[in-house]
Length: 288
Image (cartoon, helix red, strand yellow):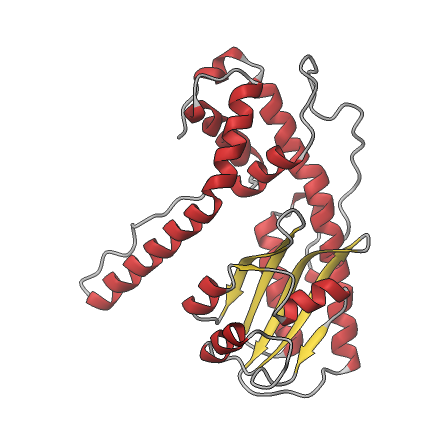
């Protein structure tokens, strides 16, 4: 799926709406700028690999596979950069690859996990976590083992400053980083006093209206592949055992599904990209 900013729908006569539109546009451009080096690196790899005319043709190739399989452009670019290149004369990128059934997502009430969209699954796990912990604030992050941290993907009820500050979280200084390191749930009873945070992180969370938090790692094969966190307006005590058990079960289900997605849907998209890149017509393609 190609990420584009749409100004349509913001057309009102309210100056406040115009300011919100401009802030949203700036935020979108900042997000694009953060991922531009990665996409540019992938373009360079594809241009060389398939002898494409220019970087524009390489972007069109990425865009083609992104739209066909509904995989985020950044996710696809990261896979191109990270994974071993296909054989120069091979018709397939991953010869002999065995596909496995999608893991169940019954904790999210998703019946057909094999056709679920990644964004919908992340939205569902966020909604489920907020429902279990009875709050209206939360966020979901995806692990990046190359960069050594977590990218913010979804959020509810949190401020723009929170989203900007925590767009990427490293390996220290936050509750979610601690939960990722320990592969265990972390409860912050009071953000104002908990030593897990750096002072900048603490200040940003408090200014967003969060006084407590609970982070749940999305785990697969002994690795943290993502994180879902709930935020609370007031300090809290420990969650109940039933809540912890439900959150752990959901975290493991979603973690296994995300790993399946990377090894199945993303690789399917790369196979399509590889086949298209070897076709002469695609070498003259342009982005849409």
